[in-house]
Amino acid sequence: MKPVGADAERAVDVRVIAATPSDLTSAIASGTFRSDLYYRLSVLAFELPPLRSRREDILLIVAELLRRRALTPRASKARTSIGSRAIAGRATYASCET
Image 1 (cartoon, rainbow, N blue to C red):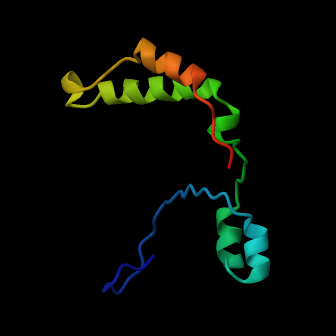
Image 2 (cartoon, rainbow, N blue to C red):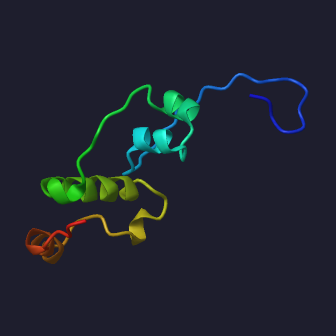
């Protein structure tokens, strides 16, 4: 890459993670998404079902986020566990259909 205002290019090691609910192949066909960008982004593509279809993952994700939060400097002020009301609420929550 060549930084703005620089005379020389610099080598960079970049990884891009991109997500979209859109059908990009249709967007390319309609001209609303660039095919060259799609080519670069689609090196490793996979589909991940939405959380509403894998509700059992919600508590695992929340637990991991709380674990990571506990490692931060302000951890003494942060919640580091999931309350029983939150667990019960998650179990009875009706997922939204979109």
